[in-house]
Length: 55
Image (tube, rainbow, N blue to C red; front, side, top):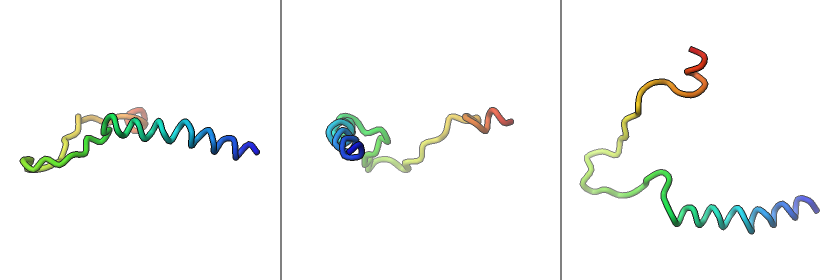
């Protein structure tokens, strides 16, 4: 019974919210730019996250 209730909540709340978010913006900035030489995005440099704490 609990699995059924959680599934209903997921499909009623989470899925529509995700679909709306994808319609509003593209978090990966995917788009075709025919004038671009490359789609490579350079990093900001430096180590972040867990590896930075270990070093």
